[in-house]
Length: 151
Image (cartoon, rainbow, N blue to C red; front, top):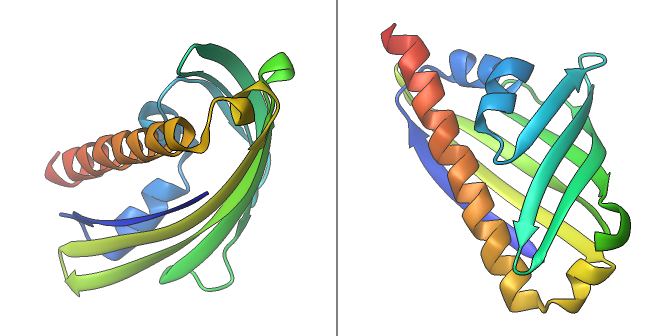
């Protein structure tokens, strides 16, 4: 499954990049996130509860960041285990473009694979849920970042 989108955030690029690396900001923005622990500048561990159609599962997983192109771009890869519900793994490439000193365009291209009970639900349901969760994350993220800039 592939997802891509873009969102304009009313904040300078360096603030957007810093927020994307702040575990407290991410925890507030990730739908269903119960815990997010930063082990290093490139390693995160998360516990997230998600409902996809009739399947509700608690996922534990890891995320690894590649910040070689920062702050203009970076990538991340991750995998999660939802027990009987299945497994998920994927990655994303994120680019941050300064539209002006106070506005940033965030664009992402992501790929994910699921297995187990989740994979049996059908790709349309999974893709629709994934799009909804991604949209909710970035909506929350823009609000938090813009709140911090205004405050």
